[in-house]
Each structure stands twice: as C-alpha cells, then as structure tokens.
Length: 212
Image 1 (cartoon, one colour):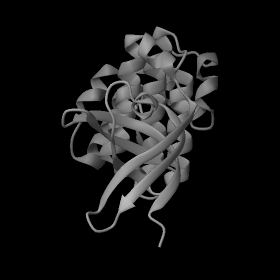
Image 2: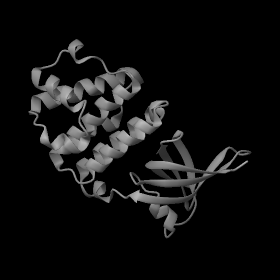
Image 3: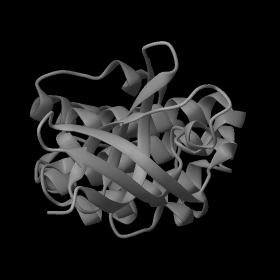
Image 4: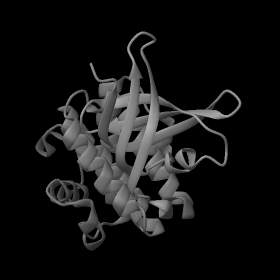
C-alpha cells in the first residue's frame, strides 16, 4: 500500500516544532484539513516553500504505524507574497485561515472550500486597505453558506444597503468585489451579521475576526 499522497493544498498555518522543524496545517481539496511536519532548518528550500497562504501541489508521506505525516515536497503555484506586504491583508487572511481550521475545512465540501479560500486569498494578495475588510466579510458570508448555516436575507434585520450588498456578493467572485459600492454603515451591518451567523454555528467568536 502506498504511503505517499498528493494533494492540491493551501498552507493555512505554520508553527515551530523542536529546534529546526515546523508543523504545518493545510486545506486540501481531497481530504480537507491536514497537519504534517516540515523537516529542515532555516535554509531549507522546503521550509521556504511551505509558508502561510501559499498554494500548490503538496506531497505527503504518511506513516500508518505512528499515524504521522511529513511533507515530502511542495510545488507552489500561488505564492501570494503580497499578503505580507500590508497589515490589513494579513489580518483578513488570518481570519480566513482560522475560520477554516475552526470548522475543520468545512466538514466535507473540500473542493468548494479550497476554491473559495484560494480565490479570496488571490484577491487579498493585491487588495487595497479598504477592500481587505470587505473581502473578509465576503469570505465569512460565503463560508456560512458552505456550512449550511447562512439564513435567508429576508429573515434578517438589516438596512437596505447591507441587504442589497450581501445579496449581490452571493453570486459574485471576490475579484469583482472592488466594483460593488458599499457605505460604511452597511459594511458594518454586513460584517456583524456574518460574524454572528458563524459564531452561532461555532459556539464562539474567533479573535481573528476582529481584524476584518
């Protein structure tokens, strides 16, 4: 039986493990969220490739005896280095990653989840300051739909601006968000209802949501 597996993956989080290794969490289109060890010191090519928000083809070796995984290789097709160049981009991207991890990668709709996350992160990669928050709300609203917890807009107490915006973005790709106008009050209403819907599903509010 093969112990090597290939995935279409996005790196969500990376943390130090021991003196020179790292633990990484990925969203994969094939199996949802996976955790694997990245071996190698600071000058390791693999360590440089496995960085938050990068996306590409991931190779993992699974040891069934220890039930442990290690990253064999990662061919990055989407570097998304622009996210680290602006604070607001980082905050929104962190909220995306933490939401995915807290909901176990959507619980089954992994291909759709990976496509949504990748498209939002692509848009964040070169988004201006004002757009970052809207992209964060866009992700939360669509993620709630993916989880099956998003209510009908007609059942919500919202102003016309927020209602129209949420209805419009429900069928738009994130790359088109910059062309949809939204006033400050309506954005705040849309942001609050998106957080409330997901918080009810999770039983808590994530700290990273405060950054969007």
